[in-house]
Amino acid sequence: MIDVASRTVSLLARLAEHRSLGGAPPEELEWLATHGVPRSYAVGDVTTRKGQPEEWLQVVLSGHLAIHVDRGAGSRKIIGWRGGDVCGLMPYSRGGAPPGDTVAEEPTETLAVHRDRVPEMIRDCPRVTAILVHAMLDRARHFTSSDLHDEKLVSLGKLAAGLAHELNNPASAAARSAKLLATSIAEAESAARALEAARLSDAQLAALDRLRELCLAVSAPAARSPIERADREDALAAWLDAHDIDDAIAAPLVESDVTVAALDTLAGVLTGAALDAALRSIAAARVIRALAADIETSASRIYDLVAAVKGFTYMDRASTPTPVDLGRGITDTIAVLGAKTRAKSVTVSVTLADGLPRVHAFGGELNQVWSNLLDNALDAVAPAGNVEITANRERDRVVVRVIDDGPGIPRDVQGRVFDPFFTTKGVGQGTGLGLDIVRRLVQRHEGEIELESRSGRTEFRVSLPMAQE
Image (cartoon, rainbow, N blue to C red; front, side, top):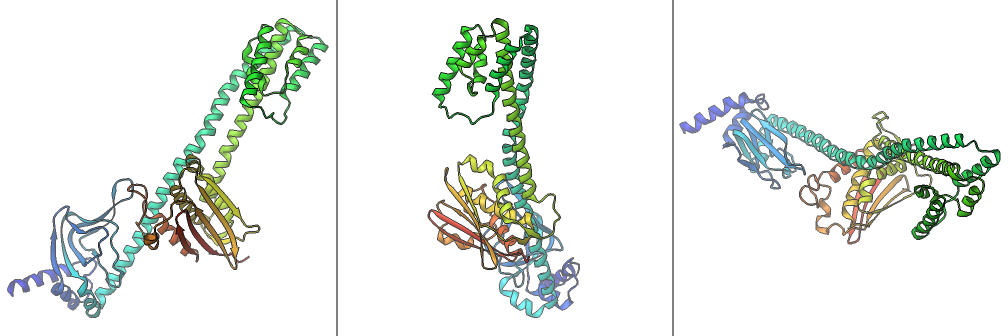
């Protein structure tokens, strides 16, 4: 009895100095000291396993407990408790399982109250209960903030990787064309100097201009097969060889409307060095225009991608809810995930109802919803699969559907897909947070999200209230 009494006195002294519970009435602290079980943990001891329900309320007296989670990039601590904190089972909590193992980071002492004692504690210790409820709410806010932050980082990583791939192709094409452009300009200048030295007559200049116009004319490209193009290049090269002209200039002339007959016409008024200079000048002009067009196309592609990213992130908008064009957000989302779509040769079709109403929302958050749903659909379908996105008005709401022809989600887990840390993907391939974040964001906008899935068809349906015009 003396040991029990001395232990209780010692616990009361430590509880009175406890940062979280020290302000509770002495009789409530005495209840904890009497009904709690002192526990000690060595470094590395696991107090609660991932997926197992919490059985104990832990009042941390000293040391350090932490939860570690592997979200695809190695184990990482997401929350920790030191002396003066409380953790584990909380009053009025739903008794969910932790997302990872709770591990002692250093020698740790706690006072543990079993779940069977919690109803009695709620009745006899109202002040302690209130403190624990506030701690539970703070923990929920921490997890929510941490989960959203982690999922944003994952999405940002995917976006950055996809965008880098998307920008690399047009940027490389523009750089390559610009480098070749310098060479072609030098060739055009050399040919121009040779023509100037030839001092062509008006008739010769007129013949040269007619061939140049034929070669540089912007017309619908002829539907030539690869064999037809190869035959045409061989014919032009043979003509050039016959006139002692470098047959390398045949390549730029292949896609033009120039013919062997037109070349014969020019050769009727120009010969020797003058004919060589004239054809080199025309070929260089054609190459310069083609390279300039390639640079323009590449720059336009880069501009469109940057515009899509700006639209997707709402980087130039105030962080307040506004009437949002869902069609634009969906289109921007498809653009920023274009690299992944093409990598799997997936067909993404979009059907937007005419006059689709706007919704009052945070545009960037809704784009996060579309991004997660589309990304999951792309993961689910096989190569060359199909994803369909539709948006329609249904009564006073706007309904967006993301449908894929993947294998479907097993019926026995469909009720868990929106739970945090639950994923049907392989280890390291998914955080288990994407659909949880989607659910939270949709609910924040007073919307609803539903799932229907069977083999060959999975549909996520997001319903959002229309903005009041």
